[in-house]
Image 1 (cartoon, rainbow, N blue to C red):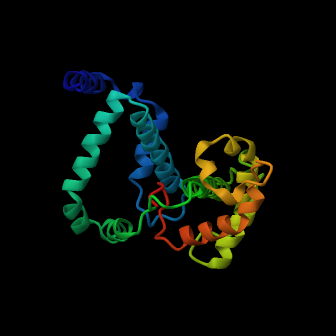
Image 2: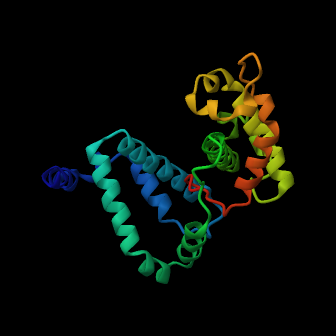
Length: 228
């Protein structure tokens, strides 16, 4: 592994500037912009791109990829060991790390639907943010808001907002997945979803879905990754 990393570094060092992907150059320059520069959506867009890259590394590590596993282990150890130093230099890191770390995580007794609902909400928040950036940069015509996500209020702790997201985002997505969920062994644990004839219906779980979304909304907000 170490020799592979050294060879990769050597190839990168030998590559002249013109050989570097322009998209990587743009990503790098956008990340260097100050967060206070609200005249351009480039910074927020670059951070969403980085989120996608890191999520790919995480997914590949889960799938058993050795290189991604090594990278993720090293990154995790580095961040954990340097968390106090980062907190000294960056107030946003200090406050948000403390808040997110202390948040109550999902218990083993939670409904099997909860991680799925959390994933739907997280993915929708990312898509909504991407659409917002595209429309702010006058690229809305290339990124149509077919689901009306920009008309939704930003997901947050308000019970009214949480119920709206449950009704307009979470419940419709779960309905589309009903046949797939009926074949999932985990769903057998949710007795309320099953009728006398052995039929599985998401509609029987509407109250539970609403309550779960409200509970998730009350947790500290994470913008890039599913922490809850």
